[in-house]
Image (cartoon, rainbow, N blue to C red):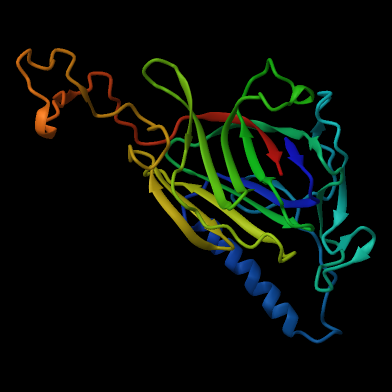
Length: 307
């Protein structure tokens, strides 16, 4: 879903079930092919053909058309969406090096929310193989205050794509954000506790670098969750952040329950004196509901975008 005052573009969204670093190797090969093509003579060059699939990708969207995407009918999401050439903005060619056949989904209405989503052909199961989520974004106008996120929505047959709105449950939200002086790349997991079923949003804390907002160049955002419960964030193929899902301090709320908790049977002695900074600290004991996890939760089957 979308709320922004700026024109943005989102191209080539993909979701892969693959062991790292296969997606980076694949991107490198594509760049190599482009470089070799540039060295060929004009007579040998062939018109660019938009790829319709990527080997190993569970889901790939080149935005040749929007046939499998459904616009929300929510009354608060009335922004116009259209396919547009990568190099054109307001009818003028602004990126002379853009490939003529290359296009993406453009958000065309200022100060309006936009919403569009699709359903995967089959459930996405990541246990034991990890997950790679990648999308390319071009800001045709600088982002003043807002986000450009890609969301993987949580599977729920009771919520059809046409009912998409800001309250629709999601599993992962990932992408750049700008608000005031803060400019970073967000990574947020909406996690269901394996113990009590409570759902919480777990934000990756700390600074995660994001590319310039006003260079009018496309940038590639990649989030990797490995089968060893590691998170890696890449921008334009370069790693800018990594963390462990099992690190209690890496997220705003821990993914798993803490290993130790305050001892419920421990209390401050009646004759304890707090003078002189001698504060009483409750002893810590092993948490009886702690669950050792070797992966992140989820079999999810829908995708959406907030840009």
